[in-house]
Every structure is written in structure tokens, then in C-alpha cells.
Image (cartoon, rainbow, N blue to C red):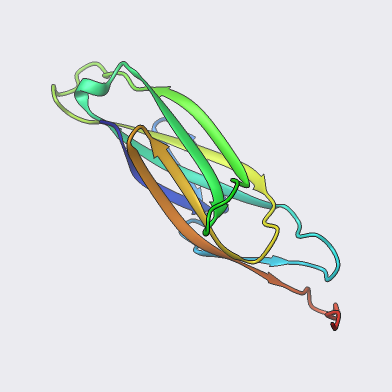
Length: 146
């Protein structure tokens, strides 16, 4: 069965010629500046994903689902679904796994600080990356007292 080999959060992600390029990757804490009394601003995130497809699973369609959710569950903040099909390149050694990479970029609004998860589902394989969102007050802006 195909498997999620790597799943990583980044500031930006690109995939070119079978290679994955991640800028500002590997973070697990996201810091947002939020003006008191204002909603949290949207945040740009990148997602890097590499998938290994076994020899006998090549040339078949596979469905992948990626989503960001609060760590305690609930509705996803964002969800992306795609079908992928990996072929066997000319000259490939029989029985070898084939790797494919995906890069996604998007805007997500995190309504509250706290824990979140990026989840990738590929058939029966599921991988997750946990991270925390911190909301800080911009310098020079006074916090509202309760």
C-alpha cells in the first residue's frame, strides 16, 4: 500500500522535477500578531508531502486527504483532497518503490491560540504533525483589560 513518507509544515513549499523545496520548514510553534478586539489574521502556510508507492501499486489512482484541525478534534479549518497516480519510469528496477512529492500553500485562519494538527490520509495510512499557535499583541499596542 502507498504510504506517507514525510509530512512537514513550512512557511512555503514547492515541488519541481520530483524534488520538494521547503522554505522555513520544520516549525512546531506559529506566532501570530493579533490586535486586541480584532479577529486573528489569516496566516500563510506551506505543506510538504512525500509519498512512497510500492511497485504493485503504481499505475493506479490513490486518494489523499490533507487537513488542519484543532488538536482536540472538531471541524477542519481547511481540507484539501486529491487523486494521484504514479507510474513506473523507464529503466526502473523491478520491485522498487516509486516516490512522489506534493507541495501545497494556503491561507489558514487560526481562531484561537492552542494546539492544532496537520493530518495526511492516504488509504489506510495516516500521518499527523502537531503544532501550537501563539497569539501575541503587536509591540506598542496596549492589551485591553478585563
